[in-house]
Length: 422
Image (cartoon, rainbow, N blue to C red; front, side):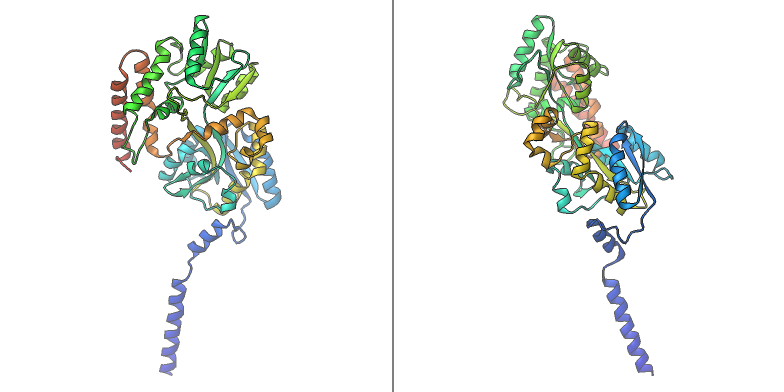
């Protein structure tokens, strides 16, 4: 009897060890999530989605279709997209916490560090719908955190009545701007004291924000100084008015362009409708090449949809993210909001490209654009670089000295706020 009991005990022990070595619950959940399988996950009555301000109209159609197909109601709230992290800090652990949130890709790094968003696993068929650069922009430290909603980058926007053809280079744009100045008007305008808009110049001349790590900053290298000298030339020669600097620079630029006192501006797709409503015979194209023959490497922003760590229904939240970003819903969103989805199928659709000049220009410019660094340290770059440009163009500092001071301040802030190199 003891022998039988002993054998039974050994057998039971072996079974328990085998069970312990087998796939655990978390592994099954990951595999399930990777396949988008929600069959074994309890279905919630609703999902809470945080949408961008004034963009809810684009969510309603997809939300209704999702509810019809899956029986889950989508309850959405609109917030300014730049305030999403602040709102997550306030409401993340409350009943108002979202399952899904929209955000610009430069918020990915900070949101991961703060624990706001969850990584997702999506199959290759779903990923292949989007451009590689847009997927890369939503990836942080090797993990994908969202799917693309829209892409944007500054382009060359011009008044066809004043500038019938797009110049091939910024050298030609410069010469035409000098001619316009002789008549008391302006030619091309840009708010280059805002580093989001001037980055394309710095990058095109060969400088860089972060190299191998965040303490490797190349904005004050020889090429960065050349870029600053190029920017300063536009102000120094009166081609940019003194009002286009500081907080109201964007308003000043837009006013001059809409009044027909400037023939072109550098701006993004968010400005298209405003210019069209002002009656401008609008033309939109990629940025002309710099005098050195290089492309203007504008910053590219990608807006995405993300699953939050506050959600108790992550599998279904991801299902909705995949659903709302599919080709059908992305195209519908573009029709309703003008937000340009980074879909490969649209770039390859010649008819669509010919009928959507602005979107096509953004997509083409995006091929030469640089995704804004999605690391938290990027937050301390903006103000010092704005200050550097402003001190140079107002004659308060030389380019090299201003950039050296800016880079030193950035490094100090990284050390203080983020602990140095990553």
